[in-house]
Length: 337
Image 1 (spheres, rainbow, N blue to C red):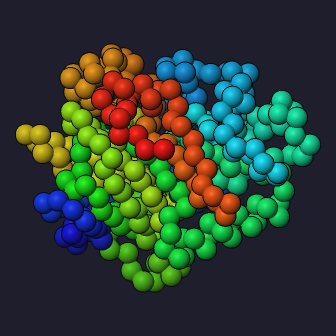
Image 2: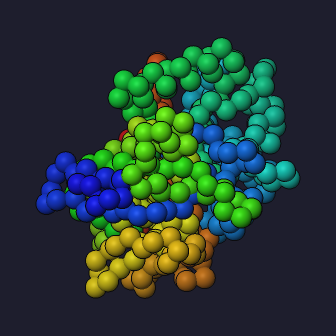
């Protein structure tokens, strides 16, 4: 179903008719694509306070983060190494900021690897999940060609899981939207583009984005979703979940765009929904075991779970905060490996 005149489509495959949302949006760095942000780094000039790597509310230092990465290695073969990063850890970061790239030399020494590592694939700063590293540039180029070819064939090489506040109207479907970068003051933002024209798409000023979703389980007004982005664009998945009217738990950037009247969700225009800490009702806070003061530290529950490689799939379990949320919400039994 298309949202009238917005260029946003939520296509349902099962159920009673999809909810469609649309209008103009916001923009920054990504959480489910792998696209490169505009010059100047990974989105905003300053990272929000909740995007620091944490152990459920407590900031992690370099040594503790390094130990966490070392313990999270899920695959090691030849030139390839895969691990699962915590939410809030940027791949590149800003000068003086703790980042995955800054920790790679020390990680290589700890693991006794003979060559320098570089990033092949990784989720965005706010996301957790699989990071694919390589010590061979030829292997990296081959993998990048593999990912590109897979998308062109209509395949989905990356699979994410998300806990959402709200349940999609349909059990599965697709979300399509035009997205672009836009400078807003001293930061770059991801903006939803209503009905992008052929010329802007051809000039790559706007990207037509697509995500396939499937509901794995629901409990108490929340859902566990499987997400497969067909395209790669910064913040694609959080924005698409916003358009689905089911923002990710811990999304303190886009969730304010989803309003409710008598329990029915609707999309607010960006000028009416300034960025703020996600608002959760008292019952959900109680189930999560959180106080309103702890809420601003709640990490984004968006996890890169699976990567398809030429030699077979790689999988990573979700981090402890994600698992804790699944248990508290009664969604643990719906997790698919």
